[in-house]
Image: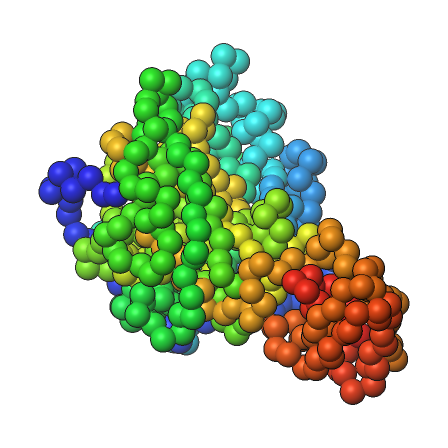
Length: 547
């Protein structure tokens, strides 16, 4: 639950987003052989390359046969070779999506906006280090020092400075992003960026071009000793969902007609009110039952730092078109911004093994959120990124293909509080390896994520009392998979009941009365399409595949 007294002096901010029709620059439309790069050496008259609604300026010195400035593009994956001969590799080894091309650049690089992006507000981009710069800072080289020095206490830094221009005039605001930062007196906070991290460019306002410069603590006169290289991807990528009820929002209203059910049971394991204090009591606000039934916006249970709640349902949740369920918290808005605690969401089809939705937090990874508002457009797959009476949606299709998870039969949902601390001793991390940053500490009884409800949007007609491959083994199904027919043997021939054939969504396709004394029956499959089916007999469900 929110601690309202701490919020009395908060300032409401309003940020402009880029026009929806601007096309992001992800470089995947460019062509490269595996493990190669383009640096301008082909001598074309166009000094650079286009991707999306942007042109990336390149400089290649033909006399020196050397890429001497601007942008290149690459898919090289060398993260171990130190030195200037490896100046086209990202330290991540891949682009942001893991299967395409990224853009290495040098200090002084320029991007010119084109098409629909001209004179709009750029959303931002993902940033990481080049292998050359990262290994130089980590180990030192013949030109540059090892960051932190011999003791590790040197207050070193390496940062990118982004300036927006409009009509050739520089804007008054710049954006800075650290590629390495050793300035904290606690050395456990020191880092060299080796993952993809979002840089928010919306503070630059409406612009037509972007210029990048760099600064380092390791300099000789005006020259950087640290290799002045950086790598970007997903330039001007669309933002995530706005707050509930606002333009561009995907949040689910508690009164949405698409909701077909709500969580039936909830079991909470509380976390401490302040995980950084050994003497901290557990969160105490609310009861487990408060998270069952429809969302109210007020009847809640608080999880505490790192606490969790496991919820079950009358019917299994299944994968449908779009979102399949939604998680409700009690956040509140100020303009386009949101005050809320966040949580990871995990699902299970057996109640034992849980699988987490890949979450993204593009909020600051360096400035601790001390009870300030979040921008929900920088959050993805994190419960709490919609305000009270609106649920954050989750689509099971994103977890398709995971071994041990049946996305058409989700029986349990687990909500795990995000510890929003940037302190590496307590931090939790998103799928990109960045620390999640939400209001922390919240050392009071309503600490942590405040769970209101979980709504179901797609459910199976099979009731929750049925279990696939029930250990009672009242029937045996073979062969499985089957092509023309499947045999069903009854372990106890003295039993009787109704044998039903269901599709994977629980719709009944056929039924047969089984009388006492029957030990086997055969089901002809000629009329069935290929797919997964279920045989239901006396509360037991057995699954088989039609080839």
